Image: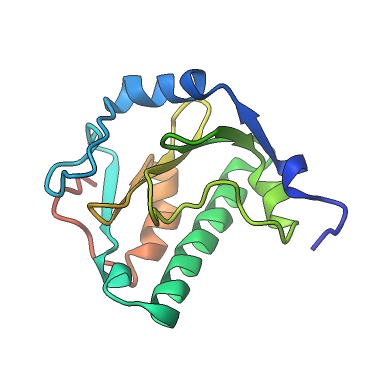
Length: 169
């Protein structure tokens, strides 16, 4: 780890409404913490939906290990695909960020927004929305979209997590 890099170097807060606008436009996001059946986003044909119930079913070390594995796998895929590109990270009703996955991988600082949806809706995406993730905490799902991310992160997670019935890819 590079001790000279800290979270403030990696995660830059951006205007919440501006950051959410492209995501809302493409996916018609509708927050509803009572909803358990229908996705909070409009799913396109390039969406793989993973069932995180296998992780949420446990407490303690099994839950922590599953959560950490998904966050680490997300960061690995983002670094490989994004290279020097910054991503947008959304955390519903909390600050939105632009960040460098490459710099995040070089620091021990905790990510500003995790991939695993432990308590809120979380999304990570390229500026042009060609690929990204959307975590739904109440439905216990992780949606991965875009061919490149499905072929990397999606394929890896499918080795130990089931495909959710809502999945299109």
